[in-house]
Image 1 (cartoon, rainbow, N blue to C red):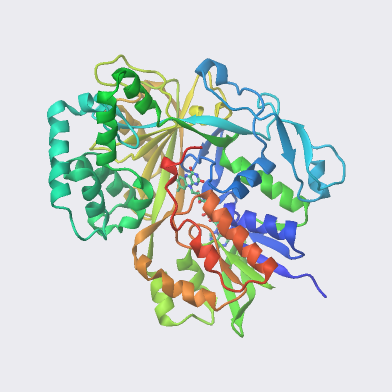
Image 2: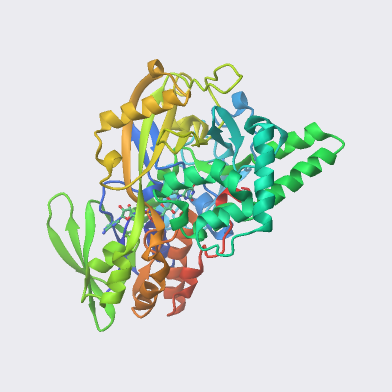
Length: 551
Ligand SMILES: Cc1cc2nc3c(=O)[nH]c(=O)nc-3n(C[C@H](O)[C@H](O)[C@H](O)COP(=O)(O)OP(=O)(O)OC[C@H]3O[C@@H](n4cnc5c(N)ncnc54)[C@H](O)[C@@H]3O)c2cc1C
């Protein structure tokens, strides 16, 4: 009997995990097709002249032990300090040893592995990031909000420092507005504005939530369904913040409690030495060594069905335009639902097409700036040439930049000359085809510099170089036909060998771990013979948003 074939659309975390799991646990031959020339999808890392940049910094942590173990199997945890650990005073929990289970005998021949032909777990001392590249770092997480030339904690909490920075009158008004809203709460919480107002009061909502959320989605909060906000601020409310503040006030050591509260937001996360792309490049190396076919510049452009099953797909070489029809037994899709349903033959019924077509997305653009140093002018302080944050939310009005990533603080190895340069990413939430999307790179870099100068974070004379990265469909939006997504799900449920997995593949605000779990569960189902796919759709249904999860 000939070997079964699975075609996987997309070499992002979900597609590559599906290929890995198929190789490890089945006899099915995976063919991964990636339309671009990059591995890792949204979780790729771009190398610009030796300085590496993510599409938004990607923290690695998950509630799922299966995921954590999987990651550490590919990139083991660090066993000794990184280049900046001592100088920055980071506290790291070092691993003593690395236990690595190889995917196949060929993987055991990887540079750091002993060349024995075995897939059994091998133990060795945990890697030293100063000497080895295949290593997962543990990093402290610091992120704050920059607003009116002041830093505020993220997520926002009420402490004496916060009250001082907001002004005591303003803080009192925030309190009153909360009490008012508590007494007269909005009954309908379908949309984000009502959801936030009920939890934080109207004034705090307007100060810290409204502008930023609208920057992210490009539409008013009154049009965004509350699901997104519910994930982000689960477990948070002004009531809780005030209870903490009062507890601090009553505490015998008020100052210590306040400091503790402010640093309680500093947690840790894992991050590959060279960014998230390193994880996915490493996985690609391994699956290729074990027989998977990974085809770059290859777009899935047609999906053909017969007797209720996918029988073949059309692959298009994006460089030459040549097409080829490849027969398959399984098809995994991580591509946007909107694209998939438009390329299915025979065409799904009009209701399904209408829902798929009506899904909306938000696109993402990053301006990378290489600087001699930062020049952060906080109110009442001397300019700072460095800050500890991994990323900073820009709440200031009058600029379009939404967030700033500081890659030196993600990993010292992301920056080619980390001692003399600061490598930052300015993030813009945009629409494909919109004014920023079509703007020339040179002008975007100029805009980025001007905006950063305006909010007093950098000086023009410190800029050494810049680049621009565009990522279409970075965010599946919870607007448009999103609420009718079950129509699509019901349709797919009837096609046993079609698996929608990942972030855009399922149109869900999934992080890497969620995206990977959907791929793992799809393979679990194939292995166990399970035909219903409800377990895939249950991933990330009722999960706390990562911001609140401690690594
Ligand atoms: C700003 C930002 C920050 C984030 N931060 C984090 C974080 O801190 N931690 C975390 O875990 N996650 C984070 N995420 C989420 C993470 O990026 C995604 O969960 C993950 O990349 C989704 O993986 P995926 O494989 O489903 O999809 P994608 O990464 O979107 O990959 C899909 C791939 O399919 C390809 N493709 C599309 N159509 C076709 C086609 N027709 N044929 C062939 N190939 C096709 C695409 O080119 C792409 O490479 C973040 C996302 C964003 C936007």
